[in-house]
Image (cartoon, rainbow, N blue to C red; front, side, top):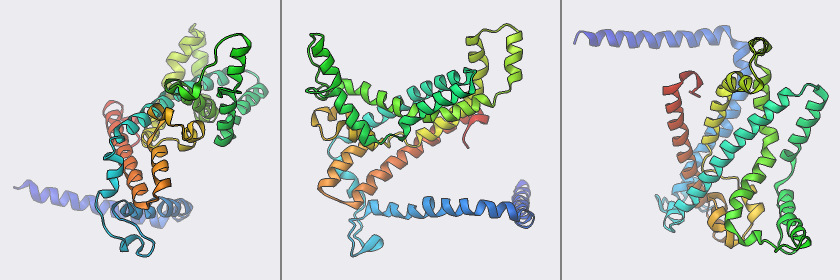
Length: 322
């Protein structure tokens, strides 16, 4: 019982110290706080204020009543996704593709960054990096057109080549399993160059003295990568992984829709949450249903982020995001 007043006094002192620190910062760091103010306002206006729109997911929205004047329907808007029995297949497809995008993409980006960092000539390195970066700026509409002209059964480049050598044509748009390879390949082609930038910056930030000491000790090229480069990239990899997991069930709509479109033969292996919701709401527009799906994706993504961050914090606290 005697410890209770001590704890209360300790908590009161902590509150006072935090308040005094805040007042001190407001008084002596005005310039720095003013510099942060635009970013803080941007975050508040674009990230926190729109969270009021979560209420859309629980209403049968109509334009006359507005957000808070529309009828409250509870979880009815979630039924169209879960009652059909397709929610788990869509979620599984979305997670499957995103895991491939994250881990295969990370492997390619790290490999590309290491290769670029080993190039001696600065001019050649810049030209190579620019060429790798170009696919990032290509519209997904054009990517879909390129893919169709390459994969088309009648006029595609690949099937024209197969017929020229006397082989049978391959119908890509009627073969669902092949798209589990095509879609990740297109994503790697489009995102590797841009994603390499952060890893390349991290590698260039490693002190040359470490590499020079390793060369004096007689390490090989692969040992240098294994024992110096990769461990130095671990913090960058961890942060990017955690940020990616936040959108684990939020698919890349433009990638899937432009490549597959409304081809029902491929839905079993290529349909994700975003494309399914688009098709459903295009027929029966409903703001509440769209908001419900967005809320579902955000909640699952947040839980994944918190769970993985907790595990990382228990194993290596310095690499955790928070």
